[in-house]
Length: 64
Image 1: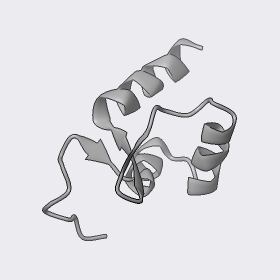
Image 2 (image 1 turned 180 degrees about the horizontal axis):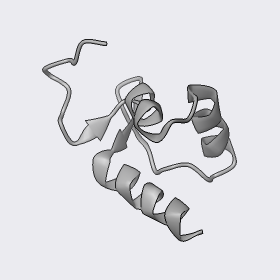
Image 3 (image 1 turned 90 degrees about the vertical axis):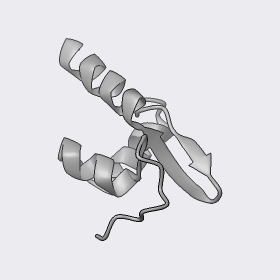
């Protein structure tokens, strides 16, 4: 997927997060429904994950 130049570098799209963490997009959305996923926010209609929140989520997964 081509990177959108206007997209802030501090955020990840769900697809990018999933690829980096080797999980499927449906799994990520299930985690969100269960309040187990990384913190996310919306930019317009798009749901995004701040890179710092993605890193915090990864650390929490390693600790458990």
